[in-house]
View (cartoon, rainbow, N blue to C red):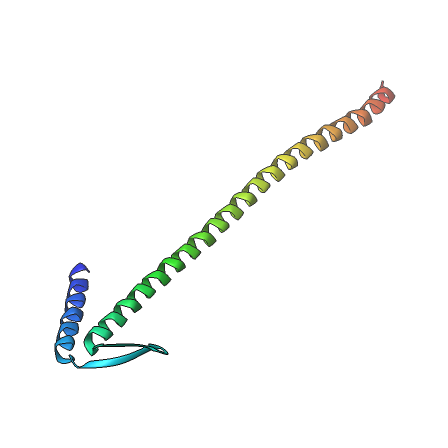
Length: 119
């Protein structure tokens, strides 16, 4: 993969160098009203290409940052849900123990009158 990347970058740089050699005529660029720049066409296009690359890189970093923030938010939500599930399971176990003890108490009370009747 590195070899393919190297060949791609090399071919791009070679094409850019050849383009620069062929396009040396000065051109006038109007940046804003009253501000003009005159430079060779190849230099202006290379600067524009560089500016576009920097902006694409910054956009990529911004996207990565947003994805990380969203991922962290999802992790926090999952941790909160896990904690809530643990809490509810503990409560469920506690209530099961209470109901079992109550049902045993009720069962023992119902058995005692029957035992006294049998005796």
